[in-house]
Image 1 (tube, one colour):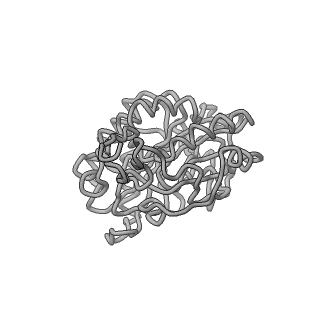
Image 2 (cartoon, rainbow, N blue to C red; image 1 turned 30 degrees about the vertical axis):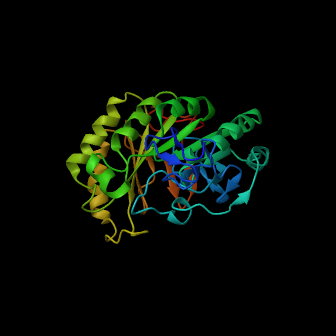
Image 3 (spheres, helix red, strand yellow; image 1 turned 120 degrees about the vertical axis):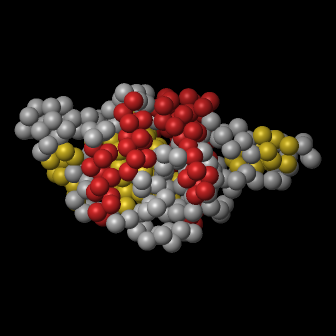
Length: 314
């Protein structure tokens, strides 16, 4: 294979790699025998986290989940919060699928997160069935940039996902992420109605905070015709982007717009924005503060008006 080019088909970036080259994700390369994972069995980080930290607010609220991530990412977001592990390949902590499944026992299950888990596809493929065999749940937090074939392979392996839709315009993805919005929307459409789904949008001033654009994204999510939660998170400067933080007033303005399209909308990184509100009577039914949870639901229903609240394990 020396001198020959191999195509990485795992994500729509479709890196063409000569022998010895590594893809833009930093962790998949051509060593002379085609494209292979360079970080299989190497974890960048693992912790026991509240499920709300993912964020997943409608999937077993109040639970803790063992969370793990490898190195690498197939996007290059200038505002990345975890760039130390996402934008490089380093020697990680050695771990096997059996060891990860063992670590997940006693918690809700296993969450693949921190960097971009799709670049760790083989570890997910080999570990998820072991977690399910033990009765655990498998959670996936992703930028949504993955080839359709592999989305279909992942769906039977995972129970809940949070997908970043970073903006609702292609220009943003090209300028800030070196990716495409269309790739992400295709992934979300494939996941909708087949796994528990929540969406996150990091609101960056003068980049993706146009009220009209946000409303269009809300309408697109509503047209999926499946229940979901939408997290609008306050941005703070990170990595290469020094834009000032999102103003709380602006985030609240966008939250009000989003609520006109989606029943369950949250404000992240801001006090008081993470309570679940019944869409029928407007009362708070799950209260959250610093990952402390007070769940007022009765068998998944609003205790004030009886409406069933969307979610799993409520």
